[in-house]
Image 1: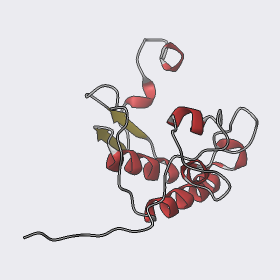
Image 2: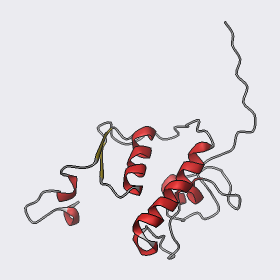
Image 3: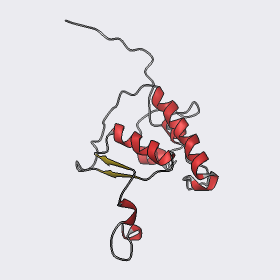
Image 4: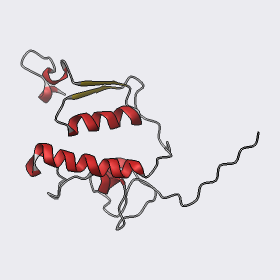
Amino acid sequence: MKQNMGADGRLPGVADPDFLALGLGGTNMMAMLWTVATGRRAVGVEERGDPFVGVHWNIRVDLFHQLGLIDRMMLDQYGDYGVPRHSDGSRFSLAERFYGPATQSGHVVPDEVITKYNNALHLVGRIDHIEFIDDR
């Protein structure tokens, strides 16, 4: 954290954000991505500690499309050299790391997928059939 601090020991980028997320669940994390993609500053504060290991979210396919839109907005906003890169020099893509036809789901460690340590995996699995049963 030291490298982000100003000479006075404060965090200058934290003051007066355009969006402040209290709690870093899925909704606030998406809101932070949208905020940054539009060229604004976002700050997130998590008070619960580390996320639980093995947590599963049921996410609709729309999230994949939103991540693709955020990728395009980031590229438009910050240019090719202003978006994050992998260690191999390729451009980081939220949608590509989330799901891709050339990769597969499996036992994943998110930071290994994101950093491309394991290039064969993506973060999500597919559900091809859902059945809702009302037992009232």
